[in-house]
Image (cartoon, rainbow, N blue to C red; front, side, top):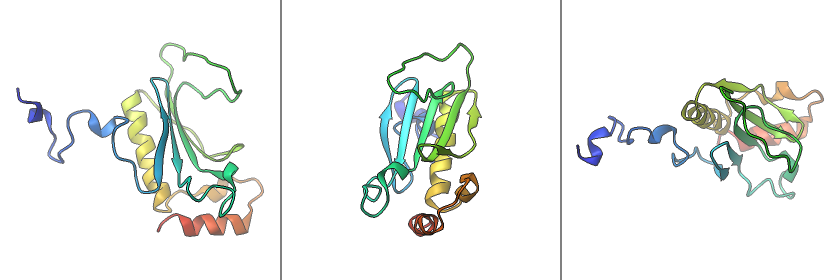
Amino acid sequence: MPDDAHDDPAGDPAGEADSPARPLPDGWQRWSDDDERTVLVFRPDVFDGGSFPAPCLPTIYVTHGRRNRRPGVERSARPGASWVVTLYLEPEVAAPEELYDSRPDALAGAHELAARFARGEVAYRGVYQVPRESYLEALDRLTGE
């Protein structure tokens, strides 16, 4: 079969829609990608400590198993572990995790979450215990452009 015989009607080669090579929604960049973890970040050009605080860089982690929060600790996921997609708005402020059975499904979920965030469709205010209104208003203006 020719290579393009596996293309879907949208022109995506089979499997590419959920691969790490899939183009990301506007404003998102892939910071790292390996077999166990993918990290996506939103607008690092403005979360530079000037316009927005650098620690508030919106970050999506796709991990095999739950992410270990301790720096320098390497671990492998247990067999059968779910793939976890987590949006961090700040180091200690995260949206609820989304669980997936496979890496392609988790990458597709992360892509959709990134697209919804960029369009301003993620209700992130509810994850803050103590909302910072002026910051959240500026973030509202940054998303959904």
